[in-house]
Length: 448
Image (cartoon, rainbow, N blue to C red; front, side, top):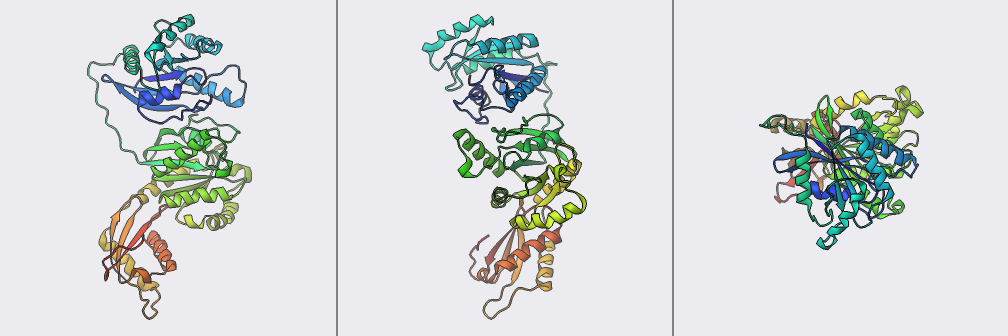
């Protein structure tokens, strides 16, 4: 286990900017608005032969009594117990504040090793400002700039020096297990995405609140499941464009769509108590456009008793509303009661295997011949269509290249029939497939 370094401070001292700088990633949203970071973000940092996990936290404001701030504080206090070192961050432009003193007392009570870093020292001429923070009672404040990297190397040197010593003189290489898959949790605000993440993990990694839009940053965490290790990505709720009222939310939604692009599988979370709304269909469209495998999780099933015969009646409605995701699997769940959560891992394993399936050329061509024999395409004069030969071109999703007589003679309805029959006969679950057609006569590549 790598040591954990927790960045701690009041709101708007630049924790996320410094986190991005130290981790060399743009993982946390940086904005002048205070309180943007709410969930804990993690990144592995390597410096001078030492490796540690850097943790960005929400700003502590002991004067605010909102439900959200209370949850931020609880999350932070839980992680203080797990931290090996606390990086206490203050704002060199603003000078010492009363909230800094409150955070300082919290760190002292924890008994954890700590370093005081004075952020926003963006030029050498501003270095004397760090001296003002001796008033907090911490030795040797380290001036630093998360904006332009001033003294970042010195800060990393100090962190490595304070980290717990290695257990042995020779550090055993850790063999990294390959990920079974990357899973993006997407949906409208307040449908229970973070609740599902926490329920699957068995711990509170994402802050859950009745307030919509609580999650802003992308929260990545390894899910140690029965089928292997998968990366779960909790994303911000995707609103209609007309409802996006601030640039912080805009960047949150942009990152959510980017998370979908790098995923293998999307958990599309719906709210059973609200049914299927227009925005749910739009998000489903993003999954379809990205060619990702999909598992539709109808959350809050406990509120509507959505199981048994009631689920069987709801399922055709869901299929009609999300007809362009006909390949997706669907499951009623409840993050609150745990209903059906144990059914998710085996289903995810099956879907990921389908998403990465490989088919031999012989099997593929035999199945295509069976499909054409059982239901041949329309053979109107001059409009005949025939598949001569096919081969698999790629995986994730399975992609097949078909050599045909005339691509333009393929009717869209028969193409849809080929998709459905191939998925069924190949035993593919929860994954789209891609069919590409190349006319043998013209030797030109047709549309996907």
